[in-house]
Image (cartoon, rainbow, N blue to C red; front, top):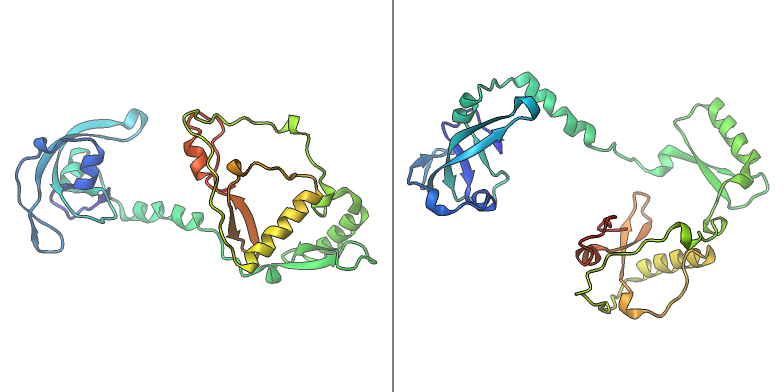
Length: 259
């Protein structure tokens, strides 16, 4: 809902009215002039219970909303002066500005590129093509200490999929609560371009080498891969769980849309 201190009426759009499972029989006739200056013919007015606040500050009261049919609106309606007066609200521009800081803080910082943030170093002096990356925001003293530490304990770190042997299935076993009314359906094969095919082949090869996956013949359970572009312009191979989530309504561990 948009708080509009200049509106002399409280407005609810018809789409939001239906989402509340309300019947049009409670709407009474009315006329309205909206903030754009021209008149519209609202469907009428409806008196609804409104609850605002949390905990001890919760208040519930009757409010009269003008029902307007405006498609493709960004809001469900407008809270005007009648409701603001009913709850004795005081609009403070200073606090409104403060409330928007959360949006600015939620925006991730721009990534100018890995080349400007990281530098590559050899794992060992004799290693060719085997490097690790260190952030350039470290000072020279801490950077040299970190490089020496990594090179001293180079055997402790896993540098690739081959350094991560397969995990015992008993430690990561999970049964999906699939609705028995649904049956497996063989997915239609999708055609990908050469760049995506190469990324898939490289990922599968590394997973096979690490024994994280094995080849099986279950075409009914195969799902097409979804490739997502990462910030470093490389491809990440994911699985689309959207349809599977719909077939597992009682699963305690909800799957993401992409995994």
